[in-house]
Length: 244
Ligand SMILES: CCCCC/C=C\C/C=C\C/C=C/C(=O)SCCNC(=O)CCNC(=O)[C@H](O)C(C)(C)COP(=O)(O)OP(=O)(O)OC[C@H]1O[C@@H](n2cnc3c(N)ncnc32)[C@H](O)[C@@H]1OP(=O)(O)O
Image 1 (cartoon, rainbow, N blue to C red):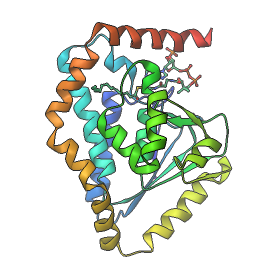
Image 2 (image 1 turned 135 degrees about the vertical axis):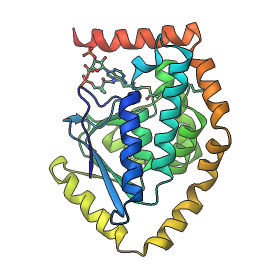
Image 3 (image 1 turned 180 degrees about the vertical axis):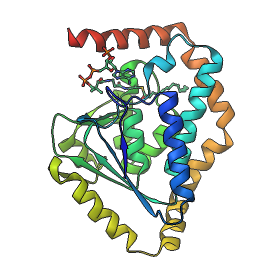
Image 4 (image 1 turned 90 degrees about the horizontal axis):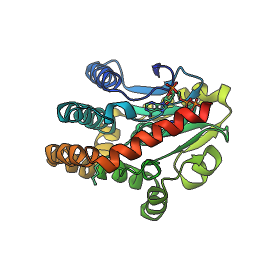
């Protein structure tokens, strides 16, 4: 089990992403480890998504390093040979949602206050093509088109209806259920499951691998625009004001 613990809200900073990728690599190379449950140690928060401060007012070199780390994390998780189960025990916007979507199975706590989705459009930014591809592979084109254009965050019951998560359980039963699902998936021979998983995900993974440098350039160009920087600053101010 991997438990995110980066207070206050498990934002995906460069350090967090690097550590996450290294942990995934270690587990992947450990022949005794056939599956991983991903959850959070922070109450009410699975992950608040990419750390916005990493995308504000930094150098081009920093943006490149950060984006490479985001790509690396996704390539490792989406392309993992292990069985991956997300036990979503709190809010899961944007990059948090991407992590859940990249797993093989998603179980969410049945709390309508917890929401999940790719809300980038609400921040004035655009979900990259591989976030979009991952989303489409889970919910299909029509639901993805609407959800991404509106930047919708769905409360747990709605997320279940759309197929964004596979099931809801009472929060106290989340890890028990995740373990049961893991046992069910691990009961199959690894090689058949792994080849099937790879077949289903290969095209989407290959697309990023083939365009990785181009994608970094797009990101830098996009995020460096003054209009985008302004949107992100306003969004951060809004988050801070919400408290007072
Ligand atoms: C065409 C070419 C396209 C190329 C691609 C280009 C660009 C795309 C780039 C990126 C894609 C982006 C992906 C993302 O993941 S962006 C992040 C989106 N995340 C969010 O919108 C979530 C924002 N946060 C919240 O909604 C809430 O914080 C919460 C998670 C619901 C928790 O609420 P709670 O009330 O419990 O906490 P606070 O809101 O008080 O937050 C505490 C503290 O944390 C700070 N914070 C929250 N989220 C983030 C974040 N994502 N990054 C950095 N910091 C965050 C918040 O400001 C508070 O700080 P404070 O100092 O006030 O304590």
